[in-house]
Picture 1 (tube, one colour):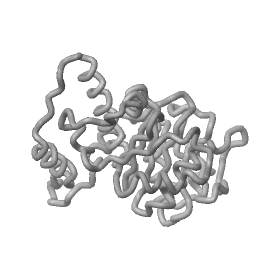
Picture 2 (picture 1 turned 180 degrees about the vertical axis):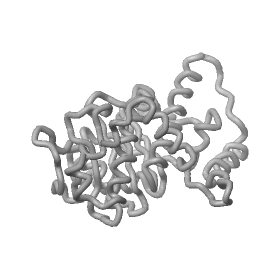
Picture 3 (picture 1 turned 120 degrees about the vertical axis):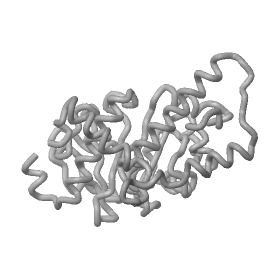
Picture 4 (picture 1 turned 90 degrees about the horizontal axis):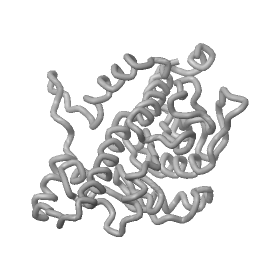
Amino acid sequence: MDAVRGRVDPEEWRVRVDLAACYRLVDLFGMSDVILNHISARVPGEHEHFLINPFGMTYEEITASSLIKVDLDGTVIDNPHEEYTLNLPGYVIHSAIHGGRPDVGCVLHTHTPAGMAVSALECGLLPLNQTAMRFYGGLGYHEFEGVAVEVGERERLVADLGEHDAMILRNHGLLTVGRTVAEAFVNMHRLERSCQTQLLTQSAGSPLHLPAQQVIEHAYRQLRRAPSPDRHGRLLAHGEREWPALLRMLDRRDPSYRN
């Protein structure tokens, strides 16, 4: 820990801790896939550099000092490991979003059963409940092109994401982004819950009940607004209220992500 922490500035270390926490939380909430998938975070003040997991470590092993720093061209800037390297699909997907969306601070990608199932439904995600309506009108779709190892796919990933903060990768999985690690995580948690509840609803075999179109659109606008202000009147970003509580939960269970 000391070796890495000693050569990065405090802001990068803060992002490293948040990103390591995000890996642990994704695992804790059942959204990891052994050593596969990836979450990345932009290095503060470095538009070209982002942090990502070493390919070969499980999410429950990730710590702040274990993360690999890479640039948008795929050059590894800092890797504290001899036995682990960069995952190529992780580089392709995450360099695409970080390069094409300067407003994005974190990119999160999963292969959950529910996410993969909905990604294969022609209807995609339906506005069946309040949680799912959060993504109505704010969800991109990207057609499957095979394993994401071709650099040429990057421009299509960015185009399909557009200005959205969530995207379904057809026949593949889910992707969310956020200005912060916290925002990307809560976006994914809600998207995953939306997929899970849709599959449960559809499996009941009963006709689906959808609210009126104007109600769906109204709920979407409500849910897209900034959350309620804190006690000082400051408007909170999405995820900002949840994040301290999530970190406290991790600290009670295993604070080693901070190392």
